[in-house]
Image (cartoon, rainbow, N blue to C red; front, side):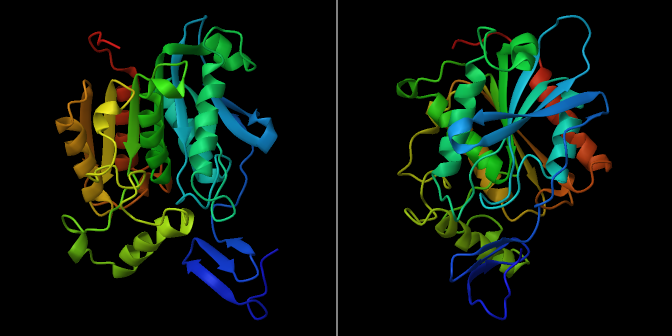
Length: 326
């Protein structure tokens, strides 16, 4: 039930996204709907609990397949500024189902705890636990038959939108650290409209035509990560000189996708360039959608530009490439 704003005093607000009241009540303003699992468009889906101690679930997607051939495994992380949305709201369910169909991939779309009730690093910790859960199936004897029977653990990818793309970067960095003990290799990662920021404006940010969007973005990281509120924290600004080298990315392929009218576009380009010059021994590529803004594809899957993005992602997950040293 929404709070009575005439009786409760507002502590902070991100317009059209979230309100937090001084008594601690949190009101999420969008992406609170629930779309049930379905079997449509050549893809079946179902929900499973992957972290019982926190009651966290994931939605699995399985395309119609013939025989016993193995499919790429895509581990997906939704956006929402680390504070709203879930794998189960309609826009993410429809998008991931379409992506699974186009890519002919087994997809696991993970939920994670949200700020402000669960500030960073909760989302990273939950997502890392999701990777370990997926890895438990690599020998074909994990708890989920769809992964045991149909996932190719030689072709494992991570992908996400916005905050989910930020999670993907941080997971890939952790996967590249042998001390973290992930018993699964990542072939590639795809970052769509990644949420990266920093304290010093770059590129077109100083003249971005929507100052309110800049103000919201400046406030977001301190809101979701009060223990380290600096916008140059390397988790939100991987290009900061004080952060770990991007040479440590634990995968062999990176795709960055940006949108021309997105405030975060220049950060995506900077990330692409930084990965390319870091000495990382992999292949990095970038795509840009002209005339569109942040997350445009999630709202109009039938549009020509959304279809082009989805096809580019599907090709990335299925592309054959020469063997590279692990």
